[in-house]
Length: 179
Image (cartoon, rainbow, N blue to C red):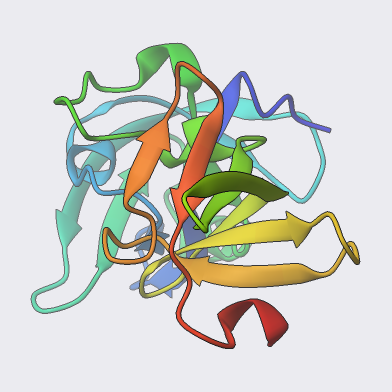
């Protein structure tokens, strides 16, 4: 099991590409350089311990959120095929510095979720996970029924994130928490 406080999943290897060991990577990151800039990365198969590997080159596929990358020592299609479904990880101490009002999604895990009702803050749940397919979704566990709901991480619905005080406020459209 990986320690969520130590590792961040930034990509998923979806398939091999060509015959020279390149792989296709689905990005789960806003930082393209993670797949373009050579250097150390870590790969993880399911829940095994991460293993270090050297990324030697990469490029973004035009018009897509996928990258073609090459790792040191992976030189054939068969080698690349073995990496299918591996996650690409970075250590959380290597996270880029963000501007004010920006957050690493990992920082949102375990924040209390509050709503503003009749000018009072009411705690309704906590952030337990993140989904990042085509857009960022917070997975929130509601305290009243332990149900999980998906909330889009957009300013209109999540107007305030207070990392220092360990909470965020949501302004859900009618019915969103009942889905």
